Structure formats: C-alpha cells, structure tokens
Length: 160
Image (cartoon, rainbow, N blue to C red):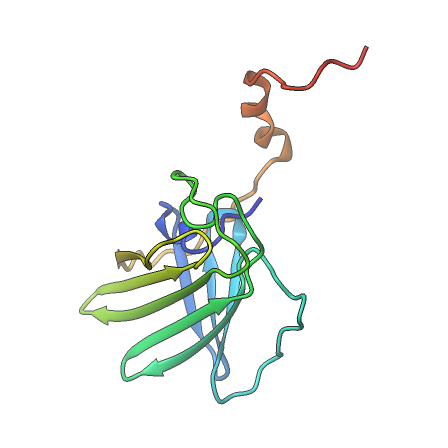
C-alpha cells in the first residue's frame, strides 16, 4: 500500500521533479509513486465528487521562485500524516507544500491540516541535496511484503 504525502517525503528514498508547461511531475523511488501537480491557469481535469485517492488531487502555482502545491481529496488513511507515528487522516486532510532552491539545496516546507484529527496545523521542513542520479525502480515483491506478517500472532481463530 502506498504511503501518502506528507509521510512519503520523509522517507530516505530519492525523488525527481520534472516541469512541463501545464504540470509538474513528482516521481518517488518509494513504491514508484508518481504525482501530477496541475498548474493553475493551464486547465486540468477537474476531480469528480468521488475522486479521492491516497495521494489526493494537487494544484500548483508559482509565487516568484517558489512552487506552492495544495493537495486535497485524500482517502482516509490510518497512517495519513506520518507512517511511524500513526497519526490518522480523514478525507478533510489538506497538505500545502512549498518548494524553493537555495544554491544547490532544494528546500521544502509542508503544512498539513485536518480539522477532525489535528488541533493545529502540522508542519515539516526539509532540505534535499541534488543526487544527479536516475531513480531506481522499487520492484516490490508481493511475497516479501508478507514476510513481516508471519511473525504476528493472528487475532482470528484458525479455520478447522
């Protein structure tokens, strides 16, 4: 199962940002996640009333040299804000990401809100260095993903 933003950004895997005329594409090594950020003023497919996804629907704009991305329409998720703190998120989650460069460093700030589970906005600040390497395919093996489950005692009675 994919890890949603903003937790995905805190992972040790690389990511790549590609600019196109009407969108920004963010590719993550982790689980081969691809996000499309539709740029304001260029027209984009409007999400339907039921078009909720684990990564949400992202709209971006430039404020000077900074890219600001607002993402809504997330599916509810028990790991919705941070995959190791287990802070859940509802469909009301909204994440605002701001990206900018300072020399060779890409800086990013995320601010997450969800009025049903957070008393105040949850903020992270990140710094990334340019690795100048191609992303490595994730190549998740479904059998490997079950490995950890075999060590947990089932809460369900055996089928006899």
